[in-house]
Image (cartoon, rainbow, N blue to C red):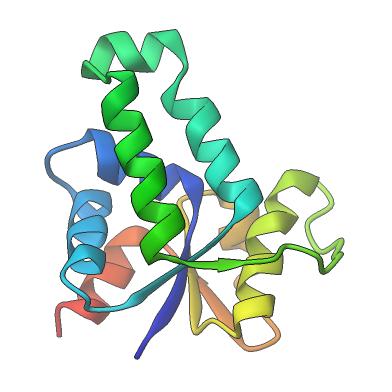
Length: 140
């Protein structure tokens, strides 16, 4: 089965928006169409962003809903250890966590809207693609 690291920006958009490619990606994961790969640090980043007061207010997120999202990721996604150290993306070193998760899981691809990752194109044979393109892949 296809293994994909879904970057935090896509997970968050897919969680709070009711339509669009990120939402379709998260629904496809819940339907078992691919294995979502993440890491503890990416889940922590997701938690931090979902708890921003501005995000909570705008999208009506409660602590209960945020906890359900985080528990679902921790329980059903492939969570990598995040122990590998890479310095692939110099302009935004935090993005290296996404690449680390992909390498550790031997993922097929990384799904992201982040320009630093997209500009990389691929790493060790792991393609980095935007959400819209990934939706086309999984909906075939």
